Image (tube, rainbow, N blue to C red):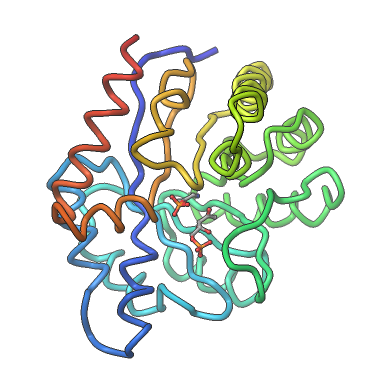
Length: 247
Ligand SMILES: CC(=O)[C@@H](O)[C@H](O)COP(=O)(O)O
Ligand SMILES: NCC(=O)COP(=O)(O)O
């Protein structure tokens, strides 16, 4: 069981692309954001190529594949189109996520327990290209145990409910759910990552949970970058999570 204090920061650059797509311009380039993030201490770069292409485009993923110094975490829905694209790109990490076209953002985790055969087949196929496959799931014991059964080496716990909680007791309940989820994932022998909706004011409690391998953070970094620049935003977040993880 890993209970190290070392915690990695995966920087999600999707919403740099959201700004570009809003006007159909060539700027801001998420590739530049990725390189700046790496210089500022990012341990990896996360991109979600959505079926509706609302932010990241194939071109971004192809260029990143050639220029990243760290590693790519490629988030994708389980469709034949995405499976074939992943096989072409061969990212170091692949995170399988649930996706619906109408959603504002990723709502809830993948229902692994409800579709084990389909997800097992996807994990097997993507593992064959050498990618470490993780499953983006709710911090729910049923889903975590199913993730182990389908052969995924890693999970990413969806922290959206924690981030959306408003009252102190809701926040405490959702945090406890994540703490329990991390413990359950480690018991199952999984690498446990977490992310979604984390920002400068809610990240420390999650970063302090022993045993989390990596936090994936995007929207809050892009928002803060408007005021301090992308490198500054990433460096601040990295310092916050490292300090929280030390306690
Ligand atoms: C799976 C996940 O949490 C991220 O990829 C996130 O979904 C990116 O932002 P959007 O959901 O807004 O596309
Ligand atoms: N998988 C979560 C992620 O990559 C970042 O989510 P967010 O910080 O943009 O909400």
